[in-house]
View 1 (cartoon, helix red, strand yellow):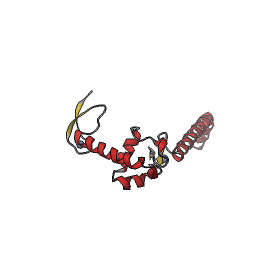
View 2 (tube, helix red, strand yellow; view 1 turned 120 degrees about the vertical axis):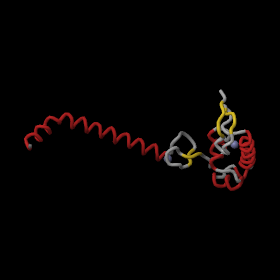
View 3 (cartoon, rainbow, N blue to C red; view 1 turned 45 degrees about the vertical axis):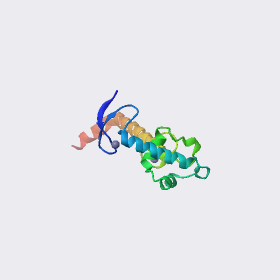
View 4 (cartoon, rainbow, N blue to C red; view 1 turned 60 degrees about the vertical axis):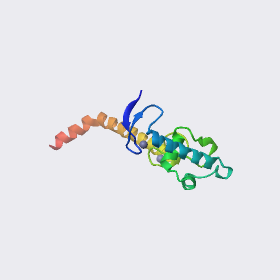
Length: 138
Ligand SMILES: [Zn+2]
Ligand SMILES: [Zn+2]
């Protein structure tokens, strides 16, 4: 399905479809950037480049490089130091949507919510006792 939309890059009206999320001009520019990035990281000495080095070496923004990675146009398996930001904290990661620390953090938050709920249930069970004490004080 295609529809008219404003290009998120330059604001021009363009026809949006499943394959194109920017206008023709910006798409061409992105393709050029992609070629530059790809040419750069394909060189043997750049295989181990970090994101910062690629940005510096190609002049392409990190956001765009991340987009290429997310679209699968840059295969992380071949480039040990590249990655994309964790959805939660922005640390560069290479798999899933969250980094290890955030996963741990969310997990421990979940466990503490569970514990909290258990405690509430416990309290509810004892609720009657509490109420009778409160009533007596009144
Ligand atoms: Zn555009
Ligand atoms: Zn994170």
